View 1 (cartoon, helix red, strand yellow):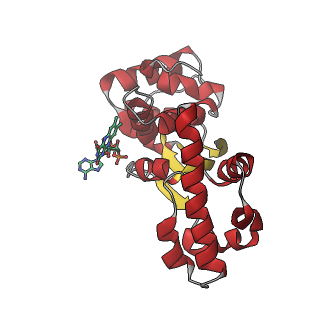
View 2 (view 1 turned 30 degrees about the vertical axis):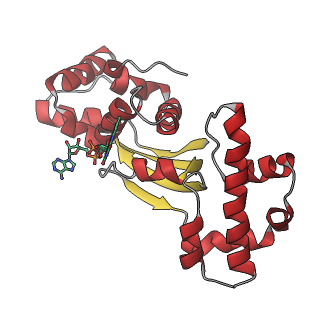
Length: 214
Ligand SMILES: Cc1cc2nc3c(=O)[nH]c(=O)nc-3n(C[C@H](O)[C@H](O)[C@H](O)COP(=O)(O)OP(=O)(O)OC[C@H]3O[C@@H](n4cnc5c(N)ncnc54)[C@H](O)[C@@H]3O)c2cc1C
């Protein structure tokens, strides 16, 4: 999993908005502004947080994670399209020829997110994914079927990538929900990684959530 913060608004936008509402002066993120941020959270006056937005480039996550992530409606997404890009698999002849466990492992690690399975189940996991990938390869290169049809063979673990833009208010909601132990392990890891990419001066916006850095 790779997460990169590609764009980030200044926290001062939040202060500017809040100071409009209060008719007061900023002290340039000094003690007065820091107290104000804590008060905004305490009062639930969170609409001012909507002025500050982040854009993340997220790579090497599963489609299982993707379908959970996009449930967060207050965000914008652009996802790598399997309809347009799946045929890159045609070029990978290693899929067709894979026989040994080490071949399987190398291929699955390249294309899929592998969960933390017990050793005895892991080899069966690799086997069943490679079987799907072999069929995908055959459907594309032998039957020349379009990506649109072949994509139905993809496992949920198949890696994808996306750009996600989200404002602070919505990101606070995402972190609250997705860093919980009840959340899927992969989205929990993603939520923490996203948080870790934020500049230090933004951490005050999330202090009440008591996030522990991994
Ligand atoms: C541990 C866990 C288990 C889950 N299990 C399931 C499950 O089994 N099945 C399932 O379908 N989903 C499940 N979800 C997904 C969950 O129901 C939410 O869809 C997801 O977390 C997005 O949260 P959200 O709606 O708050 O976010 P957003 O869509 O980003 O919305 C943000 C906030 O805006 C407001 N809002 C947005 N749209 C509306 C609206 N139409 N009406 C009123 N207010 C709105 C709400 O206040 C909302 O909290 C689970 C989530 C978690 C964290």
